[in-house]
Image (cartoon, rainbow, N blue to C red; front, top):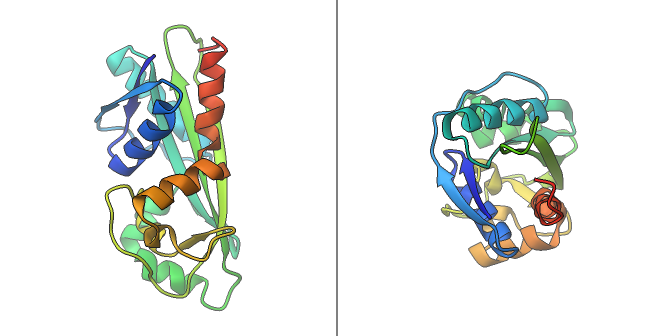
Length: 193
């Protein structure tokens, strides 16, 4: 099956391509200027994005949105991480949890749309972890976000930015970080898409 992924985030494209290639699904990147729906719900944002993309290309397409959540600040920053990073930066995120609990998580919602569906199908997952006390790691193309310098996944001792590309992808494969993609691939194999 050939599938399109509407996003401008090359790190996301790389991760999705790798995971779905393992199950025989070819992912083609389509770079569209996507709307940025304002909502607290990742699923709603992903649905609006995929409907926009599908209206433009009329081919099987996925779109996603991710949020980052600090347990010390319930619901924050959530899907608004981009403007928060543009304003506060990762150092500002570190300040927010300086004297607080450091637990946090990433959440991802992916929506799929094709001519065979009446409405988009949603898949989601969550990766728990904690915030470091300082920036750690180095830049890499496979990174989705600057938060990789401060996020230590549950069960790990290094940030995502301290992992090599292979270690990072292995972490995604063995944890729930890619669960939504595996669930999606299984759903497609069962002929539901």
